[in-house]
Amino acid sequence: MALGKDAIELMDRISYIFADVSYLDAALTHSSYTNELRSRGMRADSNERLEFLGDAVLQLVISEHLYSCYSKHREGALTKMRQQLVCEKTLARIAHKIELGIYINLGNGEESSDCRNRPKILADALEALIAAVYLDSRIKGNDEYKSVIIGLFDEEIKKASQGGSDFKTRLQQLAEQDGAALLEYRVISEEGPEHNKSFTVAAFINNNEVGRGSGRTKKLAEMQAAKMALKLFGVLV
Image (cartoon, rainbow, N blue to C red; front, top):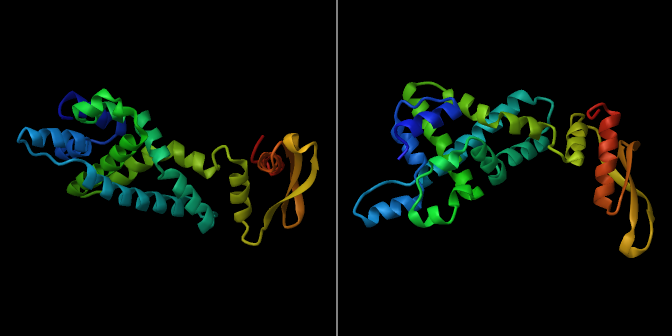
C-alpha cells in the first residue's frame, strides 16, 4: 500500500504530514484492488466513500475561498469559477501534476490497461485524498486541510479568475463587476459565400462599442471582439 517511502514522497508533494497514514492508504485504494483482495479472503475498503466526502469538502472550501477572495465577483461569475475548478478535467490535471497516479493501488486488470492515467480515476483519487486530509486534520484539531486544498488548486484558481483562455468569459466577468452593465454582441457584417463566410462582430457594454473582431464563425468573431475589449480595459497587454 502507500506506507513507507511512497507515503513520505506523496505527503511531501501535497505539503501535508498525516497523523494517521491509514487515511492515506484508503484514499489510494481503487475498488479493483479491494475486489482482488476479497477474492483472496482479505478485507479492504476502497476510496469510494472518501471520494464522496472529498467532493463535498472540496466544494465548500473552494466556495468559501472564492467568496472571501473575489468580493467584486457576482454570484454567476463565482458559480462559473467553481464549476471550472471542481470539474473532472481540472481535478485530473492537478492529480497528474503531483503524479498521484503512481501511488494508486490498482487491480492487475487495471494495471495492464494503463488506468493510472485515466482522468476519472485520477480525479476520483484526488477527491478521496482531499477527504483523507480533511479527516486527518480533524484528528489534529485544526483546519490544515483548507490550506492544503488551496495550495493544490492555487494555479487553477488564478486561471479561473481570469477566465482561462476564454476571452468572452473574462469580459463577462469584468462586466458583472458592475451590476448594471449589459454585455452583448452584434453582427456588423457578413461577407463571402455560404461555405466560406466571414463575420464581423462588435462587443457592446451598455450600448457602447468596446471591441470588434472578425472570424469564419460568429463565435470566433465574438471571441476576437472580446479580446479587443479586454485590451481596451487594460486586462490584456
